[in-house]
Length: 445
Image 1 (cartoon, rainbow, N blue to C red):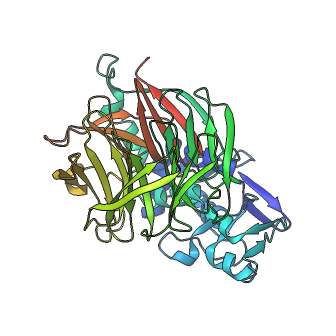
Image 2: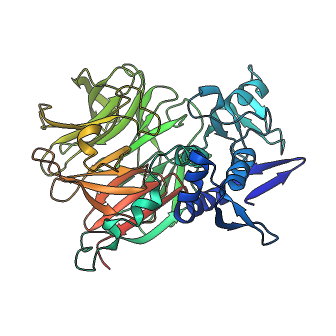
């Protein structure tokens, strides 16, 4: 079992949990789903250490007792109840949010891990995305493997020319911890990722070598509290949205602080840079899209204004460097039914912020068996839109949203929980929070 014993408790070892989740998704999704729905006694391919074949009901019970239970209060983790959400401690152990608050010293805002006794800040804890993804899998109506064996993946070589293949991957648990956003430095191709590690922004070479990191935990201009997204300007400056102190922070490529905007935002989330070098920021709390003009040479914010209002929980924002068009992804459009994905809406604006097209979850779910859970969006080289699907671990092309959207698979294997996308020449760079990695896909077979 993929567990690490500590005292009398067995605690999830997150670096291995991603492998476990992938194994469940790719090899036994049908049996696990049957166990959830009907408690079938049909044995699955997984077996115990003694070689005895185990039924789906037994496997499911062990998953719930060993992986989905807080080993402090022994309550089941829940993504629906805020205080029951699984939280990573910096040491790698996982407890529920309520236990984090219970064990923490309110004055010092610190707690001691109940298993290894390592001291950590409350602000250094994050949702355990691997367990969240596992719970979503067990509650899903359509197993991922049923799609991976569908008509999309049994195409001939000629029919699969548009599907991208994994070219390289780097990162992993420890190097990256619960990554939330990525961006690419244009000239060099280096990649910057924001995540929950000690240095919350990490820069990698195009080959995946870690170059440097910056932004230790804190609320100062050189620090980062809870980074949500990152963008890189044409001049190589790094812009980060920090939900922890409601700010947008600008850094040099080496991590030196340049400017910080703290005034108008309630929950700055998505960030990108338009074709003229102006910073675009979504505020998920106020439902607005901001445009911020910065003189990076003088480290001075020249102007900031709201350009789009009445958005509903906007998160991702992306600007097309060729056409100037801007896409905004809205989340939380009502409560989803059990087993359904969170309703989303994708809006397309001109460079002057005039709405030209939009598509919602209902329109995206074109096939009866499809339930997309869109988490991020990017423009491809031709100006079409590409979206990641966390429910199935896929990437889709929507084509030109201004015309009739055409849902076409682009990446169909190798992803667990994609949360970020960047296109660069013939490559698609994907941030996968399921195994804390950056994955690069290309059309070269």
